[in-house]
Image 1 (spheres, rainbow, N blue to C red):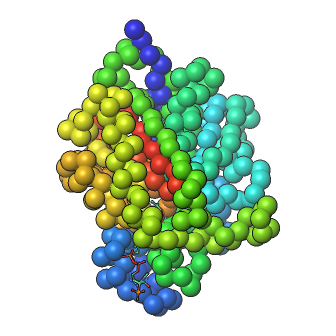
Image 2: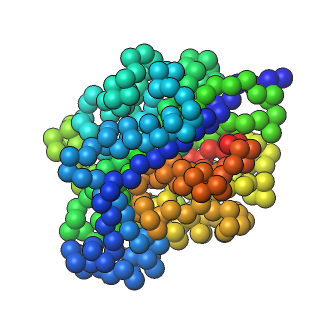
Image 3: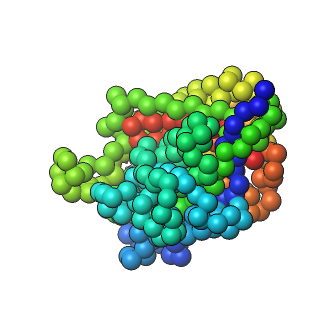
Length: 325
Ligand code: ACO
């Protein structure tokens, strides 16, 4: 019995040049390096230049992923771009990326699930590829959260950063076994009752403004670990795997304390956890592909490794992806 699987051909990322350290932030708002590191693990974040948009970051990351995969942009027939900070309300940033890559066929669209965006985008592309609708997909997470931060609110502005990451997926026939390469299982959830705990206070339909990010940090923290671990247990149950089988845990990089607590609860060994939140901050939908790119580039993630991804974010939305590299 064979199965069509979405196999990762390559990944890539891009970070804006400007680095904003905690010390520099402490000159703008009443905070300190010590407070930020202790509560979040974040030491610095990258900030896009004024003329650098989400699509620019995404195109850099996409080109890096295509080069890493060793394939031509023309062979891509699907682009799913996860972002909460599009260049414009419409058209989708994905079509700007499509045109920037010189692609004139297939489909390109944005997907909005805030920090869970990349996990939702991977699951979406995987379903299209396994259904035979498309053959090769670029799945991108790209954000310029610096544009929607209230830089006078120390409770939120210290947490986020800008960046982009991308993976190339290809539909491939695999033996249909747990040892298959590619995406093995995906699990997505949402619960809109929590929508006012992490939101942006503006939008085209409600205020005709872009708005700023607002968050009840403690409430988010309270729900995060339970939601994350639930959806990972779903992935273990669906695939007949356990924490011991995982080679690398690549979580959404929101906060080191949330990541540590989730890994601890699931009995995932600390040395299997890929952490980039210290250098990147929370880049929302971009954080997982950014972390994947780091761990691939430094030689940790290798072909055949079993990788567990998870994310939780505004909505609330949350989800997991289990894949073999
Ligand atoms: N610097 C110094 N002091 C601060 C700062 C800051 N940057 N921000 C808040 N404080 C103060 C508060 O004003 C408060 O002071 P008070 O006691 O005098 O009123 C005190 O620190 C404690 O504030 P809390 O908000 O209760 O601090 P908490 O320990 O909960 O830490 C944090 C805040 C880091 C935001 C935490 O709640 C958290 O990590 N929440 C998860 C949120 C998150 O990661 N969101 C990312 C988006 S969602 C996602 O991606 C999963």
